Image (cartoon, rainbow, N blue to C red; front, side, top):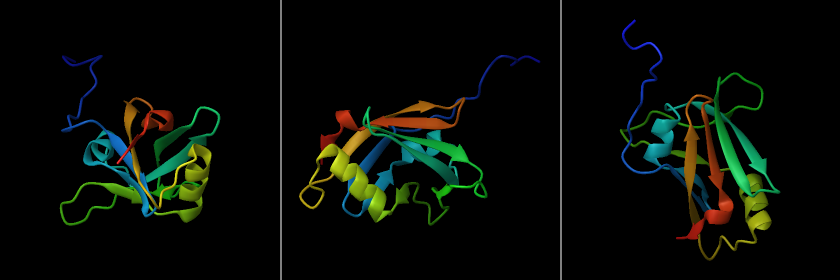
Length: 124
């Protein structure tokens, strides 16, 4: 096969990012596209390294978190879990009632994973 050894690349405008506010965690269009518009993800937190990771998964998998929903042409994903938002806010010593934070993600398409380093987040 002519393309043996190649991996198809899906281009997205912009850099994948995640924003955290008191209202939820939002993943931008680039993040959703680089996650292949996954319907569900596993959500991971590494407290010692202050990182969040997401991994594409089957919607029926135990612990699956709803991610992207096809809606009126708007491509983004949001997680509205107050307990998780509180955990991240406390871990980072953020006052989310005053400001939100945004950080860029690193995509690992072979594993269906994206990692966000919260220590590099900037106030928005």
